[in-house]
Length: 234
Image (cartoon, rainbow, N blue to C red; front, side, top):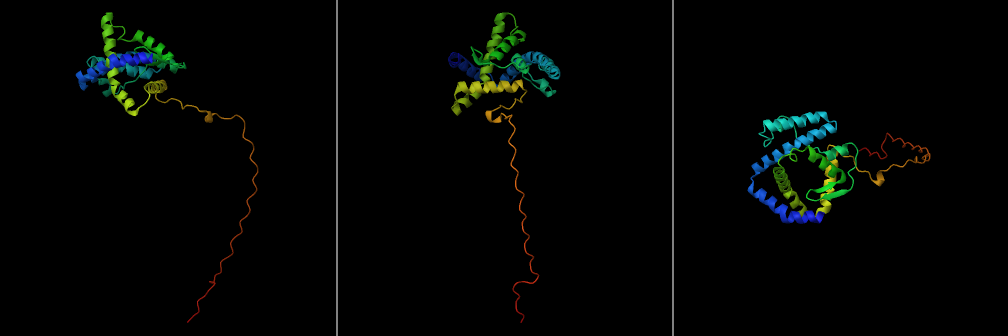
């Protein structure tokens, strides 16, 4: 599946993404990113509630309302200026928050890196996503395709770094994806990985041998008050 996605990317997605960056100026791309990020805040807020993070749910819900109104439908990020920062939440993270392991690494057609847990989460989020519920279906598909082009255009710079460093693209994306997802599940503070050397031995250590008492150090001889050699008087 990775080869299929890579071939599709080289033939279609990457050229279209480059054309998007060439045609749309930076301020326009920022507004478009803000618009889709605002739509995503609905899914973020719902998953805040499912993780019992009610303070963040209030913050993210307030962020959506502020950007939808004061931010002209989300094209301007007015909420950040009011102290409502952007968070990332999805149902895959929610499953991980409640202790469900990610499972094997997967490469989904068209969607790219994922896992069994995140694949289930992706389907669940599509049910509550505003973009996925746009009607008619033809207009919904246009939104989804355009969002895919936007996301691919944002990854062009990262791809240049991989090519410059000469890294294996598949291994790099796999490791980066799994590490990033684990960091999101633990709110940026994932547990330190355990190694074989870190595993403690339950066997108590053998008692230490008694050490001999240190020998007393003899005191130095008292120095003579008169120098050993006294210069003769004249």
